[in-house]
Amino acid sequence: MSNGDDDPADASEGADAADDAEEAGGAGESTDAAPTLPDEATEDSLNEYLDEIADRLDDAETEADLDDVDVLLDDAEEGLDEADLPEPDEDEEDADDPRGGLEDRIAELRDGVEEARGPYAEDVIDAIEAAASTLGDTEWTADGRDDAADAVDAFVEEASESVAVDASTEHEDLNDLVEALDAVAEAVADAGLDPDDDAETIAALLDATDGLEAGLDDAEEWDDLETHEQLRAQEYYDVLGHYKDFPVEWAALKEHEARGNVDMILLALDSLQSDFMERHCLEAFERMGKRGKTEASVEELLGRAEKRDQPAIRILGKMAADEATETLVEYVPEESNPQLQKVVFKALGEIGAVEAVQPLANELDPESDTADLVRPHAARALGLIGDTRAIDPLADALAEDDSDDVRAAAGWALRQIGTRKALEAVAEYGDEHSFIVSTEAEKAERALDEAAPTA
Image 1 (cartoon, rainbow, N blue to C red):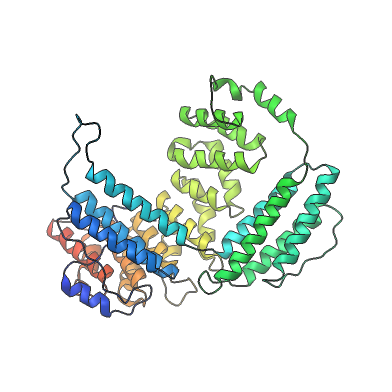
Image 2 (cartoon, rainbow, N blue to C red):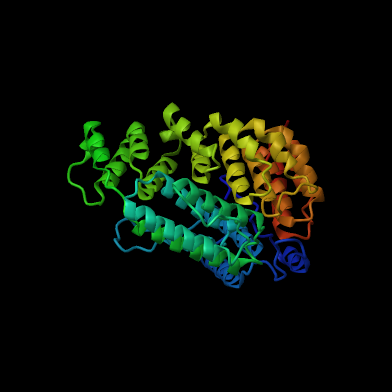
């Protein structure tokens, strides 16, 4: 999702644009007439618009369909921002709040889109890598090691029914088990599974990873009491008074996040080996954003990003950590991992990494191997960076790309750059057949009329 003032999700205005959108056959675009939102939206018109979006969500069958729903929701958010709705009476406890109700509906539909997405092959690979990390980082008892080995053997056998796995069935130590999991992850990556065409295969693999995770959870490990003693000595728990959340480490983590104690969150991340605490430490940094950026936290996250850890890359973007630019730029052309590309592109956009302008522009080239679902993210990242060197490649994508989603994203990005040259490059498509492209053109025209800055 983009963090600009709006995304190229806006529905076109007027009956003529809706008719044109119905006739369009571009990639990722429904053949049904697109819903439209009046210039001056009301509570009723917004609710009707959301009803139509909900219907489209129910009918969505592919990732492209869900992308179209996302752009329509962006349009609904913009319409809500601009709508003149009555404010609730502060003197009445149960007073109606039209804006709040509409915001809740949009949020609910957003959640519905995310729930409908996938599953993805990358989800399987992430789960396998997490299991491999657990396997290698845990101190097992003798019985626990045998149980963990049984869980890995069962997983490899089950995964082999879906993809061609080249893994040894013999293992003398934990490294052999980790190598077996790596072989399955490589097989999944090489299989080129499509989230639409191979949904059943991906789902079966995810079920197998669930079994693997459960087997490792049940395997016996040593209790690391020494870790808790060290945390007490370093005053990690001193922030706690009365607390309700369990475990106590989590309760302390929440308090450290609220107080902005970055060093203590890093201490917990380094000391506590459970996946539960690792996830919550990383989520704390993601919520903190720039507030959590220190030399030490960036160093920790960069180490993870160098292993292509997507949560770490996402957090570096939220922190606007320009120290991550060199590492992330290296991942821009990784067409074999579109999920990684999406996360990297957005992070580079949030960082404002001017060094990434040319690599991102290269991903807009229709001759590249970049997937249609990924190229819009490259365009949006260029818009967030805002460098004028991106105007020409974005204008070329708007003029020549076969995907209306890519073209609309390029139009949105040009509007974010906002110079007269950029706006004029978009404005000429006001009569475009695609409603999401023509809407960007109409907005560019309005910006020019309102005396956009010259450059």
